[in-house]
Amino acid sequence: MDADGFVTTHLPGREVAVFPPGALPAEFFDRLMALVEAIHRRGVVHLDLRQRRNILVEEPALLPRVVDFGGALRVPARGRVAAFLRDVDRAGALKFKARHCRGALSPAERRLLSRMQLARWFWPFNINRDRWRARRVR
Image (tube, rainbow, N blue to C red):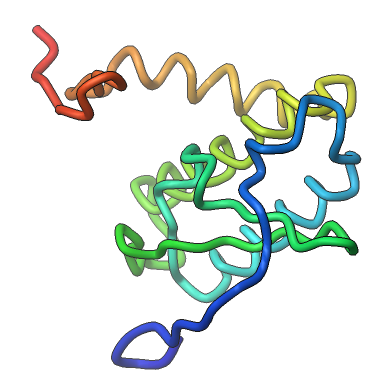
């Protein structure tokens, strides 16, 4: 990333979702969280890491790759909204860790997932996964 935009390139790998639960080690997800934190240190939030097609696994080394920054935002280093948006990214990555190796979740990671699950109830829009339309929650 530079001052004007993102540099893109092809990244080899398969979607994280094609791997059956338990096929990826906890170390993969530790590296994924480190990658997410590196993205945040650059002042960017991805905001779409819950989508399985946005996290790739580069084989045979099992390295995580994050793609599709189309909905990414630059955020300030401090502030409640920026902290919440970074937690959205973290929870998106942790969703896959919980699916593949739930026992490896730390207590802090479990709390974050629970907190973000609760936050979805208060979010002003509910996404209908079948039709990919946003509808207002009353």
